[in-house]
Image (cartoon, rainbow, N blue to C red; front, side, top):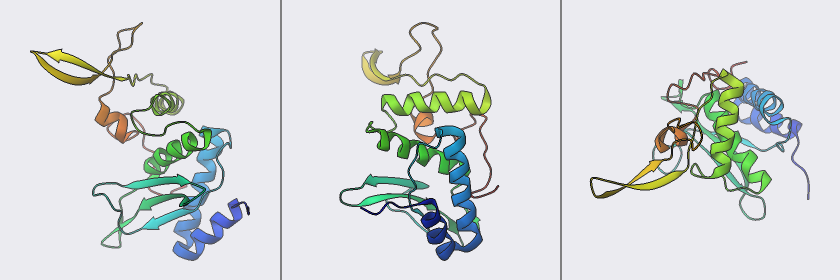
Length: 180
């Protein structure tokens, strides 16, 4: 099997999107070194005008035996305004990291919660708690909540905030897509 390389990433992105594409690859490389200790394998970065499934800003697909591996970022709205940003790129790289480690990569997985807590602390110095989902009866109604930290009692982020990480005012703003 031919191994996709960083140079392949640059050629692919540069051919499709010129300097913007190359700068996004450079940002992926920077994030890979800074946040994942260069553990991620090079992957095609696809920039698209629209994505399926409604409101998604991006998508990390990972199935090297059938459909391949990509990070797809939703870009121009009216061909001028970028929707995805560097925060979105990092979000998709967390999915890629978990996929490559063979861990479940969904927003409700243990690995996802572990990684967003680690990265938030690394980026901002702030300790957040992304507790597992639990069902509690509130006024007789079964309600799904995220559990507080067992030892400290720290309240968990909501599942919606966990799923949209690092967006939602967590103190992380890594800039416009590809911005160096």
